[in-house]
Length: 318
Image (cartoon, rainbow, N blue to C red; front, side):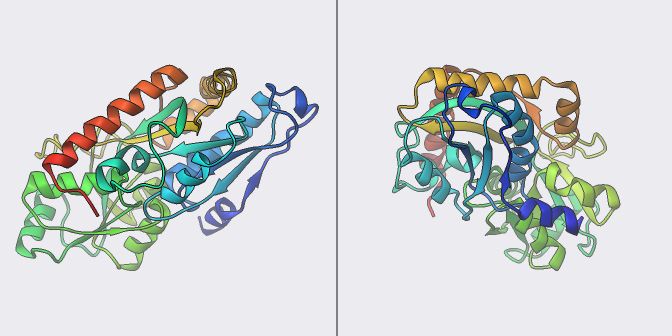
């Protein structure tokens, strides 16, 4: 597993093969896929799983470039300021859609500085704890938190991520007080759990599945259906309303021509329809979506507005 994580940490540049200039009108420069999370997290794993096939489909070099920070702002700002020529695209996670409800002073406009390509996938968020925690199910974990108010902490993949908001919903629905500790992705957050820095971790099955299957950590509940059926949803475990899912979408700088965005979307759609790759994605918890650029723009507006309205009722500002 350590060797696998080290491999994930290396920049990924995939050869485009012959005649890259013929690959969808992009020219000879590579396409840079900006990932706002550190290597080893769900966003990075998804990017590196899709990149080889996407490169072959587009006949274009795809370079996965990690630009991580705890709020996923650095990567988004970089893409917003990039040329709208199809050579820079952004793999957004929930922080991109939730950040306007948290930070009213973002250095970019989530709606007007980006053009949608496609919403690629969604996945449940899984709550896991270390084996040293004296709880075997959600009811016992909530009881432990109530007996120790303000002492239990949870790691997330960053401020505004689905893994952050899942913790907010858990505390709200269960009436408990938890300390949020954000990291640059679900990979470092998982490392924090393993080292004992935090009590629990909200993360994706893609990053934590191997540890769950090995019994190194205990999976308590998941936010939605999907992945390991032995892990109950929060609702099935007796706590409805903790139902936020992880989302991954592709965006380009505003003004990127629709034909270029459509070309990338069509390639993503074709790649994710491959039975072998789709099976790999499903095993890791990713459930493909693949809508159109126009649908993705409308979906982005709806998600942002929904969480801005929630933010007006519940103070989410950092």
